[in-house]
Amino acid sequence: MNKQVLKANQLSDYYNLCITYQRRNQYFRKGPLWLVCAIYLTVAILLIAILFPDLSRAQTEATSKSYRYSERELASRSYERYEVKPRTYPVFVRGGIPQREAVTLSPTAERIRRRKYLADSHWGLKFYDRLACTKCHPQQARNLHYIRAKITCRQCHGPEPIAGLSHYYSKMSSRRRHAFVCAKCHEGANRSFASYVNHEPNPAALSTRQSFPLLFYVFWMMAAIAVGTFAAFLPHAFMWGLREFLPDSFLSRLKNRFAGGRKQDGQD
Amino acid sequence: MARIKRFPPAQRVFHLLLMLSFLTQAATGLARLYIETNWGRSLASLFGGYNKTLTIHWWVGLFMLVLLGIHVLYVLIRIDWRRFPKSVYGPDSLLPRKEDLGQALQHVGWLLGIRQLPRFDRWGYWEKFDYLAVFWGITLLGITGVILYNPVFFSNYMPGWVLNVLLWVHRIEAVLAIVHVSTIHFFIGHLRRHNFPMDLAMFEGSVDLEKARHERPAWVERMEQEGNLHTSLVSRAPFPLRVVYYVYGFAIIICFFYLTVNAIANVGELLG
Image (cartoon, rainbow over all chains, first blue to last red):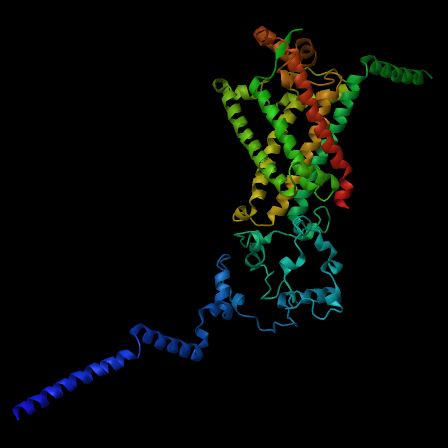
């Protein structure tokens, strides 16, 4: 009896032990811990990715205009309100003109000026896709970037649509030109550097006095110095050469002849 | 044939280096300016193309600025500081004096045959003009050149549109210098009857005493009165050396004429 009881107790203990091990083995048989963790993590990431797609870090800069502008404008130290927010008029195609520029000029000038504010400055031009830039802007091709460095218009002004210079998001806008255009080649270009006038007017032309007065006046000042130097010293050098080349008697004879001529006139 | 000392060796070396560096700058600069013409391209190809021409232009320009710095130091050392204000305004100085204006007018009168030849001292007014024009030219071209070499850096300290203006200043001043040297400076130094075919004073360092007595009587008389004329007398440079001077001088002249004539001939193609 005792033996049986004992056996029964031992058996139950044995069974308990077995069951414990069995459970443990069952548990372990599912796989090692790191694999289980990896599976759980993958499921969690997939869930997060499905439920919250905006958490993708790479998209943050591109989706937030204000963030991008504040980062780019660090160089120019310019945080004006209209840098971030559009003004009240619609920005696409039909642009508005600020009140201070709303004086109407000739119809053509008005049309051109209005185009400065368009998102697509060439909007509505007939046969536009068949024209080269220099067909309508021949003067703009006379600049050092185009002639010397062989840079095409597109490399700075970008692909279609080319925004007007005064459009908010135009990369040619004076506020961000240095970052979006100049710095592509001129590393570290700042806002001051971007004010270099690439499409330089003819410095000698009278119209430059209005558009670029310093260039006009400095050009003519330097030209005056050069012309003045030659006007003074070229005849001087020429006469000096002549004076040394001719014998002294030549001048004295010349003088006598003229003096003699005058004397004869007086006598008559 | 007694000769009188006029330029110490240091000044002759300065002039020699200035000739070489200025010729290089003129050739590389004109090659860049005329790169749209066939002549400009062939000139640039001598220096290895458009971009290498700029590299040479930059290094030689830097060399000229260093030369100017050394020359300023040299001038400061050579100034007689014990008789300071007087020595700078004296007849041996290259600074303009009141007499120079009168002499210039009198000289023009002599050219017209109505006045006597002025009694020039050591330096004529045209020589002072030449010397100070180089000072002004290297300073102006050097400053604008250094700024144009690194416009991104210098636009931190000035508006970027000043670069447009500086490029034109650099161009006009350079053209002025090149044309002035190859016409007026060469004419006075070589083609005048007095100096024909070449004034070797800047190479030999001395001038003929009789010639100097004729052209610069006040200088010779002043030295005779001070009693140091005999200490300034030197002998003529040996014949082979004079041949070298002639060859070197005429080579430089031919190069400058080549540049100037071609530059003028290609103006139409450049602007057209």
